[in-house]
Amino acid sequence: MDASLKESLWKQFGATIDMLENAIRLCPESVWDSELKYWYSAYHTIFYLDYYLSYDPENFRPPAPYTLSEFDPDGAYPDRVYSQEELLEYLEFAREKCFTLITTLTEEKAKYRFVNPYRDYSIFEMLLYNMRHVQHHVAQLNLLLRQDIDDAPKWVSQTQKTY
Image 1: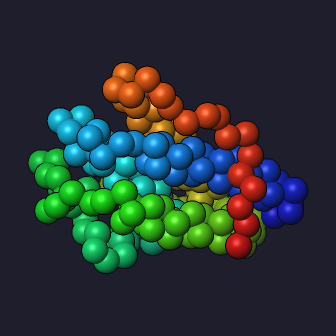
Image 2 (image 1 turned 135 degrees about the vertical axis):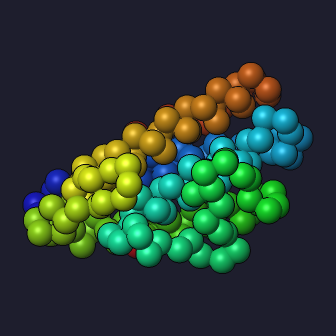
């Protein structure tokens, strides 16, 4: 796959992840576990970021201490509230996974199918879908911050992070 295309994809997807990180960092403790469930929206976003970066969704397992509670058909929350530090660590794990997936993408890997009961997308399309999903939730988190503390993180045009 073309190196400049992979670089552009990473700079934009990485910027989306940076915006999620900024939204998590800006959230005050008083909002984190309020009735808004800010922490849960952040967790949901990271969980699916990780899941959608998987080549084998059927055998996906998040790193400990996270569970597969997001797949609960009744919408059960995780067993406990995750701290900002825990979610920032999980986000870093997912960011590295995303960087690796994008930078090692070949034409063949890009065409590989991500198949679960709801989706049958190429890995390339799954990357775009995943980026849109993260940005959707970043916008929600920013709206909650704007409503509660009258502040929100600034737009990130391109990530500067590499591994």
